[in-house]
Length: 418
Image 1 (tube, rainbow, N blue to C red):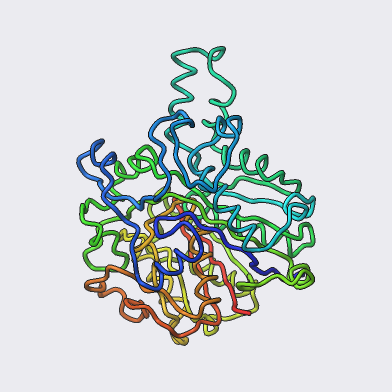
Image 2 (cartoon, rainbow, N blue to C red):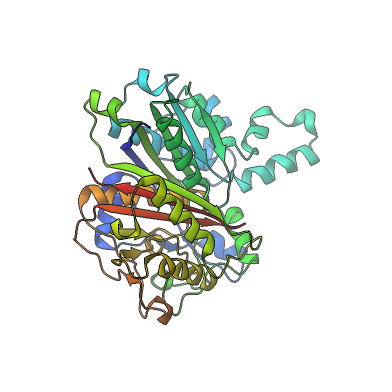
């Protein structure tokens, strides 16, 4: 099968709105978590979010929105946009520039786009409210589009004139990892030359508060204390928004046009827990199977892995299940370094897989391994797992990224430096 490489990255995130800013934050251990006044005003428990700086969506009227000056939208385009689509246009434009793709390559039948988002809960609520109170005849078509769960997909394919394969994925927090693995397979099979992989989410109280009802979110009000993956005092995750875009490309195609390469996508694996609607299988066996499938797909073994970007969100059940999976797979092998960069970024839900895959590509290209921030005291359950509490400047050769979502969806992605 064809080899697949990553030739472009784009970021809008709590820790930076471009590749350079994200890299600097990772190197310096700088967190993007902040106290969010509008969130705190709506509830008495959850107050922190991984805020996206430089963007502001105060009302549902796009004319009230503000975003960086380099972004341009027509009024018609903005009428169908949701916040995470605005983030994604910015990240897409950076990724396209980073990969040095000309417009004919972006809008080619051999170029597709796979994306992942939960939609905009805020604008979905307003769209349904309009239909129920004003009536269907007085609810505009753009309002209906902003309320659709695949609104990101609709907006991006139109904005960038995508002619190849395009699909919107939704498998909870594994969504954009599923998108990346599936996009990789399309290129391997010769069905596309280039694939954009996009993960995105809003950073709005309507996206955040449902998770507070599940008691999954941290109740801390000090950003220095949450989220704390693998720490004995962790008390839940902190949600973030933004967008991450990776450009996947067939290796010979990339070489022929002289593209710069971040890493090769060596393989991926997926498996389900078959355990519970929300809770992970405490044994971690679903993730174990996903990792083993990724090893088989990549023709690598556990001993080849130098660094793992863990899914660890800072919930007790999730962190412990992942630790059990890591011990089962790497017991008796050389121990890879492990960190959860969610301590810095927050948990991006559908965005998480793409964001952390992009972070792995930066680590491989730049020759370092980011730290698991905010650890005061590691959970004793971490014994036997090499958690990075400070940045390592040892250059990894092979990196793995984990994603696990509600319903027991597990994905493992493997990248190798070139």
